[in-house]
Image (cartoon, rainbow, N blue to C red; front, top):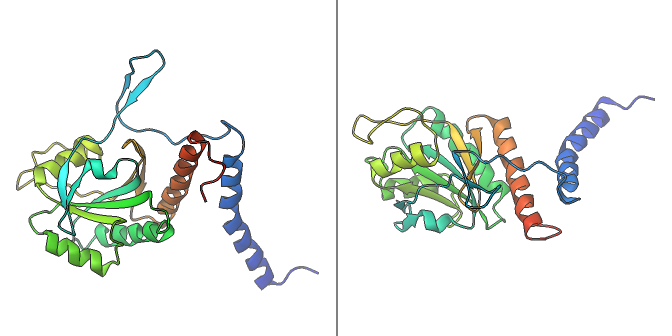
Length: 227
């Protein structure tokens, strides 16, 4: 007798839910039997033969939505997802915020995973405005940071640190960056992936690749499990 339609649906759903677990179980076995995530950005030869120096984020000092100084040093040793948005945006930003919230929910119990949302409209996105935006979208303090500050510094960081805009600009009144990119950054502040923050499935890929990056560090540290 063929399975009834409800049973078939249940089996399909179960297969979909278990495939990621099987994939990461395979990743966790063996020494070098999985492909590491790509490292993006300019690369230069290191001081030793065979070594490569990879691009890292340019240093910065800005302010978060809680009124604290927020710098590149605060994120060292953490894996994080970054975006560039503005609170009054009515097009792509609300979709990106909802996807960032999904990432927060998926990794709320992983203290080494954080999220950073840089405003591209700091004149309007004051600390108070970002605090209200963070409250509205249930950002967890210490997990998801909304960042504002000097416009030129933010725009230089977007262009020269994260490479999210190929257009030149001076960070002046008529300069504007609007991107749907979510960017995955590793513990050494290297870029490990770009994702469409308006696309549900591409954000699924981001969340999967965060797990791959976690496994990468677990293998380096000689841990048999990260959970």
